[in-house]
Image (cartoon, rainbow, N blue to C red; front, side, top):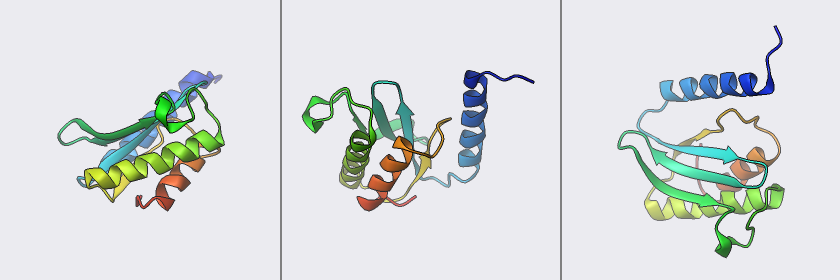
Length: 119
């Protein structure tokens, strides 16, 4: 059974999302998206369907415009933790989508934890 990389990614994303839905318990969701050139993260309240805070390498004032490396991921993680505190969110759950918890995703999560987010 030869699955393509895309099929494996989609299966992983559904598996992660379904597990998170089961344990959501009214907490916000920290959703991560990584492309070849950028990385972005949103803090989403699924009950109301709104975005509470967001950060991305597309923001020029963060100093990592158009970068997708470990340093940029750590900067985005620290930024989202700071913005989450301003929004009044301290506890959330981490939705890595279909991305493996390794490298840039792990660096983002570690920086967010160091910034005060609990997940």
